Image (cartoon, rainbow, N blue to C red; front, top):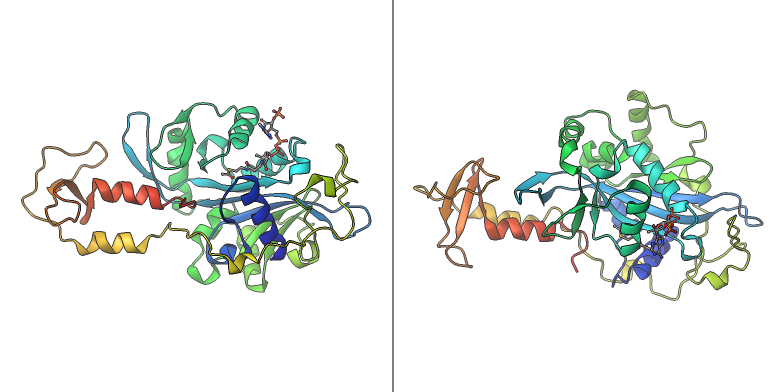
Length: 336
Ligand SMILES: CC(=O)SCCNC(=O)CCNC(=O)[C@H](O)C(C)(C)COP(=O)(O)OP(=O)(O)OC[C@H]1O[C@@H](n2cnc3c(N)ncnc32)[C@H](O)[C@@H]1OP(=O)(O)O
């Protein structure tokens, strides 16, 4: 947990975020999956060192297509990605990302990326030829080809085999947040407490034999270290190999993440839903100005605090333009 917290802090610092968006406590309360790249061969320590991590998870989003129409989708999203400063541009990011793609069984253009940094945009352009973005009004970035695979995404929703993130999405609340996956440079391990191990037979059942090298995270990560932020602290790191010093570097003078106000993941946004559901749908609505993405009734909403404007009822649920906009904004994991 300390290692995850420290990685989250380092990533936030690298991205100039006001607070970490990845921490062990957050991993326990959501269905995201954390891939961690580790080097076991750190000379001297015997504990291994963390090189970086990649956090992904499925999210319901409203995204615009090329015609400006809203689509409600649930893509796999890249939520946080970090390689230690001293090791960037050595190919480790690609190694980790590639492992995630294979493990989740997704193509790069099927992903949505949560407010990508300039470095990540360059990375995606270079390694996956993802250049053309489709403009959105939220902070997620999607690329040309995203809508071509919606059929595949639907399959995942309906129980087709998927990667760890898809499994976690399908897992009932009881197992929520209890399993993750560690990608190590030389071996892959599942991160989880004893209950989390319940997911392993599920992988077998889907014909995906767990690696012979599968281990409990306690044996590989529990004692691992993370390189410090300052590359100058790492004199033994070479361009060709990763050799952080022995016993390095979990120390931090910052207070623990748990004591800082954590950013809220508003994916569920129950408050917004409650407001929407408490409003009755009016009968006798206008039907002549339907938005392109909805084939249903259109209302005025004189009771709305924001005044009279268009609203729609879809499958019996009240919607208006502001609500849609609101939802888009608050589905982002980075509220700032
Ligand atoms: C949704 C999100 O998570 S947004 C946040 C993304 N994370 C960050 O910005 C944190 C800081 N950056 C990093 O941790 C890393 O640079 C990552 C994760 C983006 C990429 O990992 P790396 O190990 O550096 O990638 P890898 O070595 O496989 O590929 C290198 C390519 O990435 C891109 N890249 C990496 N660093 C930079 C940089 N400083 N400036 C511009 N492009 C960069 C380039 O395309 C580079 O290719 P090039 O060297 O030929 O120009």
